[in-house]
Image 1 (tube, rainbow, N blue to C red):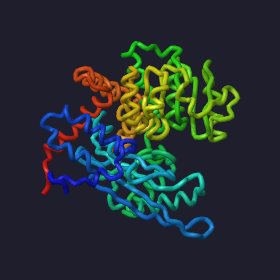
Image 2: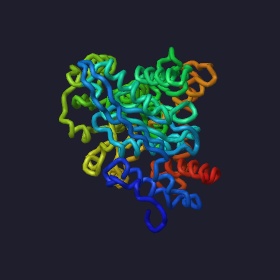
Image 3: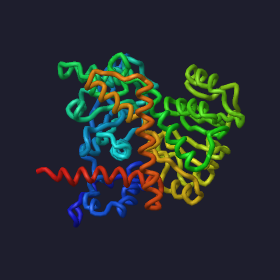
Image 4: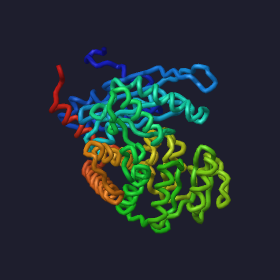
Length: 428
């Protein structure tokens, strides 16, 4: 404990360039705008619950491997934890803590009745068979089963996880408690209680918030040049919607490399190519570009939709876009954001820009409880209304306080979180 009685545990590994360090800096920037609620701000700097589990599984060759898994519940003040599960060889506890914290802010920013949580397993899924991944998923689910549930913490897909993984999680949890419990996860297959519109929801959210931001900037989407980093569900879905809105995709970067075509990439050919080959590289309708040169591609809109920590000061100085839409979680470091602000480049932050996925996850959760399911058109209309209203409120806050959209989103979210915290008080 320090002199004020506050533990410094949450600052472990919190260098400015780390995800948790970036989150803490964002919270510090919000503090001057919270008034009396600042009394509770330390609760935002300490995850409520952190679980580290060993995940031992028998591999196909008969050997036993151990993987480290995490589930972090950052805040449960406004409702059950909500956040994805990622499989990646570089997953760390510090990263999962930050992602859980951003989920807390994201859910509050769009006013969903959830807290924030996140999970991860340190594994390279591309090096394992489907059966091995199923065993990993089921063992991990059993290990974290003590803290998840429809009213406790609801996992969802994230990096390298999908509806299939969610089906395994739902089945494992259901078998362990002796009752089919579809609401324990979201992002499930539709025939197991999943929601229509969920797969493309995050990409749709990027498009909706991007369209609204562009309109406020006086930037027409017709013939706007869009560059996208990451071409999975989020990047490809956003690309389709922007092209449908009249824009052209001039560059795409994924784990395999970078391709560019100033006249616009043909998505009708590119998307099937990416599915067949697992990368956009090799697409005949584009030229290959050096990876770092992606950040210098002339464009109007840039969409980082891959992993966190992509835009630091150096890359920010080279970006030529007028508008950045954060399809990924935490893609912009604070140093990079300061450079972008100095250059007059607007950033629509992840906590609102990519909130389409968790919003439709909320719809799925509600539908599972009621056993009444909506049409995809209904889903898309409800999603658009929530995101447009949320962005309008955040934009107004930014203009009123003369702060960035990110800080405004945090002000809106943290005010809601800490108001709830104050009303609930401390127990015991």
